[in-house]
Length: 343
Image 1 (cartoon, rainbow, N blue to C red):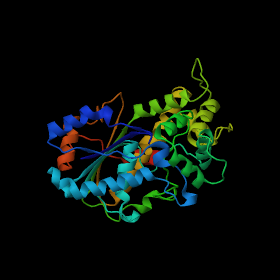
Image 2: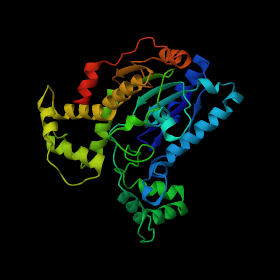
Image 3: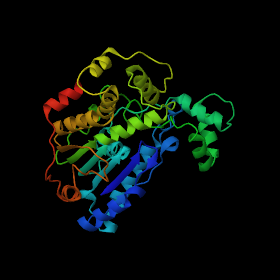
């Protein structure tokens, strides 16, 4: 089982989950391989205009998978039975294996466990101007173009880069469907491998993660003694986080209509909206599209402060799926829930 686990493409999760991987390895007689790759500004800087990869972190992953496929037999593993386990933003990176054929790569995984982000998740958009902001703070030469900025970063120490980026906590360098390896957000799943017959996928999310994201967004904004229940203020916070746009905009009519429906405060509805746009709906779309290509897909949804996929999917369930691809008790995707996401 190959593990990719990270938080918002900025921080590695593997150390925090070491005990979990040990439990899976010992309890399930499973070989666990954790993959390290470049994160944050080092892995997902956007400099495509100068021919530089916008996703060095993704290329790291593909190189690692190729090495694992070639050498796993030396560790008593079967290269034909590799399972990908993506957690957090690692789920996004693991799911790219489903697009390998159209990306000119070789597919690796027979089964995938995906928890968290997926290719159509709403992600913070980092503009090229963000790179210039980092470069200026590091006292790089005032030269136009991302290429010179990257040269400056190459000459800097990792500590210096880390300390500089920490001054801009709202800048999250992430991949995006409008940049490699996809190149367009309108029809991401058009690049799925032509057939996924024989592939099994267990995917889902934890609604609690949407709550954590909401609190993180609030932490980036001016301190408030009470969380504002004003839709325009909440929308402005979200807008700043996801687009970097510091100019307040009016709440779109569609969002206003959504907030006027149902029960609960605007804060609760915004939490649910974030969870839907970042986690639930993108994962359901992935499930829908991959099942249409022949994959056997099991979908779950849970809520609570979790250690891995529990309480929806327990350790024994994970072991059973990793070893056989069979489900025990998982929630299956239904057409009504998927239509609600589309709307």
